[in-house]
Length: 344
Image (cartoon, rainbow, N blue to C red; front, side):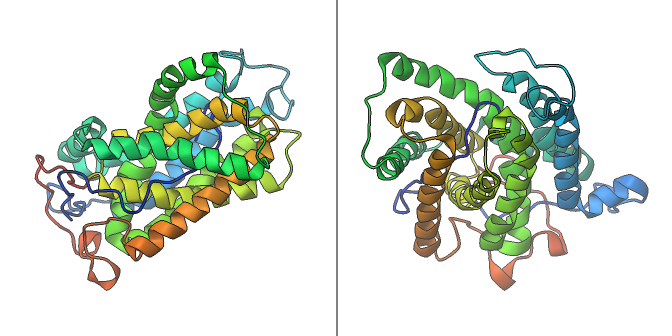
């Protein structure tokens, strides 16, 4: 999560219905059109697209965030402060690195490894809005419900009604988060990385490998105002990574059950950030940033545990798991472009 977000939280119910068109279990293609992977740097990328993606996503983002970290918005080693937009310097300080990292790396690696057909499939999921209305209800309603329950518990019942101004601003802020945090992160973490990893190591292992990597990507930002520097304690980034691990389980389930719909993944991610940074602050003024993060982590852990039990670790993944995958180990042909759930 980036920009003015706080880490994601609550959960959809395990019993919610599937998307109207289930996702087939087609795996990513690892073969070049010419039948070889080539040598040199491009050959290295083609042989290790996931490793390349993770290295680029972190390296490019961290490099772009360095001025923000060193500025007066962070460590204060550089006597420059990023101009405030909407009351914070995070937009100009964080967003460039966020766009350059996950989505930029996914675009580059997909183009090198899968060429134009892969780019069409990868970009096509960004337009996959045609999902049954029940999943819109899941993403739009369960996030606020879960966060409200967590807020009530951790605030000891000290709840205030949100103001009319905050309620009126919720939808515009949600749409803003869709094109900032959602668009910057989800095409990389879920669309590129999760889809490929599930065919290599299965959905359960993928969820628990991708979660820490997703959290790790954010860690340099804890040296800035984004992470509460310098007032925050050392435990905040630790709790945040735990949150990312748990919430990634929920996000994996939503991604799989909606036929790999990126708009739905973006909507759930943006919903957590928007609710945490607007309505939750109004409703639970007694919760400071660290206790609020702790409450969100707790509800995410409960949601993840429920989904793991209910799905027996499959998390809605339609393909073979455990020792049954074929995916990238043996190669496969590219999925048909018209299929709702085709992989990258």
